[in-house]
Amino acid sequence: MLPKSIGKLQNLQTLDLKHSPMDALPVDITKLKKLFHIPAYSYQLNLERRFLTGRGVPIGEGIGSLLDLQKLCHVEANNGRGLIEELGKLRQLRRLGIVNLMGRWAKYVCLHFKYPPRYLRSLGLQGGLSRLPDWLPIVQNLVHVILVNSKLSYDPMEVLEPLPNLLELGLSNAYVGECFCFTELGFQKLKILCLYGMKGLKTLKIHEGALPVLECLAIQPSPQMEVPSGIRLLKTLTRIDFCGMLREFAFSMRPQHGQNYHIVEHVPRVFFHA
Image (cartoon, rainbow, N blue to C red; front, side):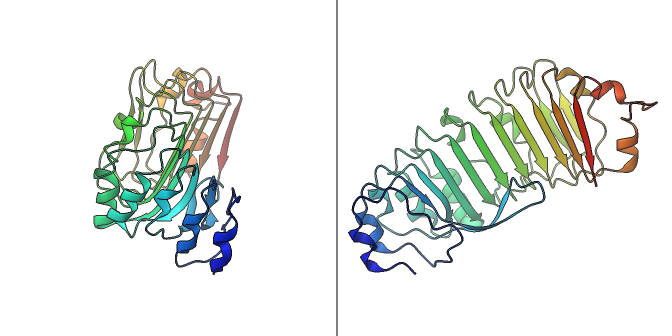
């Protein structure tokens, strides 16, 4: 619990609340007009040490008055309309994380955020989504996107691949379908692609011209997946990590007599993890 006197720290620029269980940010925080960063979450890292699971902190009325705020993660989505109204005032945000999206709260975040921060570079959304946010294509400066437990019923790549500056994309249990399609000219700057926890995924369709500068690819675990033949088109790959795949999948890419070795032979480092 933060003391009310926190409001006296008029020159405070970073309020680090990581791993500090809190029911809400105190009202007095709105007096800290020079705040740049509020990292506020409790989390656990998954085995790949990329995706966060856990809780954020609820934000209340007035947080939108911190006009210089650049980092706010992670906040709880349990105040849908009020959350969007406050976030819409934070025009300088560079990094935003929203957790525990569900039901009507997810709807508010996806449909009613009419003026997302134009400088936003990093976005993390955790929780069930019936659709990706309508405002996502507007945020042209995004370089880093993570979707966790979204469980989308349609391929999100058609929305994500036009983002012109995206460098890293992480999806964890974000899609319940069987196929991802990477179309020609999609993801022109993407360097890191992580696909985790989509156990129904069977196919990665990678067209000529897609992912032209991709360096790292990680897939875990998709036991029904066919070996993606389109990997051979990704000439800039330097590392692939396959985690929790079937033994036959791994054996087919062995340098000695693996029938699919030609697909990955150009990649310097290919790892198979149990």
